[in-house]
Image (cartoon, rainbow, N blue to C red; front, side):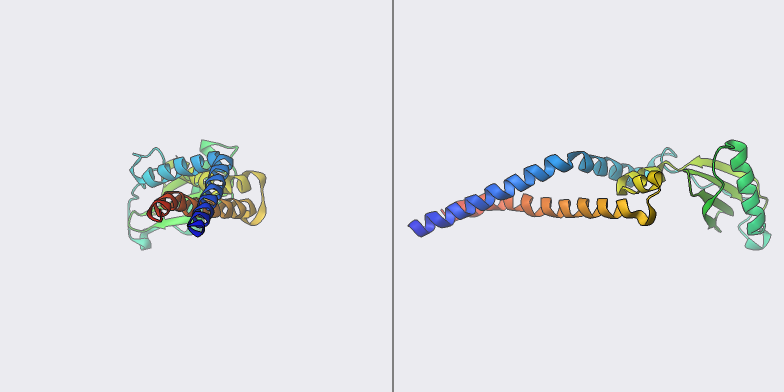
Length: 189
């Protein structure tokens, strides 16, 4: 009988420890989990946001690459349109996305969240967009801190995602035990 009581006391002690770890971790990371949850929801809905989070990809005049302007000409046009829209923005290009099925080229810039879509054949401006989804993604994964503080190699993002991932794993384990532990104790009564 005393062996059964001791085992039950040990199980109760483990439950109390798990409850405390779960509660303290939750209290410390509440704001971060809230931000991850909200930004995750927004990112999940970005393609269905009617252009609010993710701009539509416009169509150019030709999908035949033989009709397209050179990359250099397209780049010059994109930089020109960006400067026309806001001369204070950096023209340092992060990447160029070719959309052959749309006959369009999208230019994304390094230091801000503006993109320029231009017709690949004529170089005409199709759309200038604010890349809200990219901004939300950087909030979601913590890389916004790296972006604004110029931290190299995504160091903050790596630390942040490691902490959040380990915390979520810890929550899963302790949460399961907080659910299963009492059931187990009742079954052993």
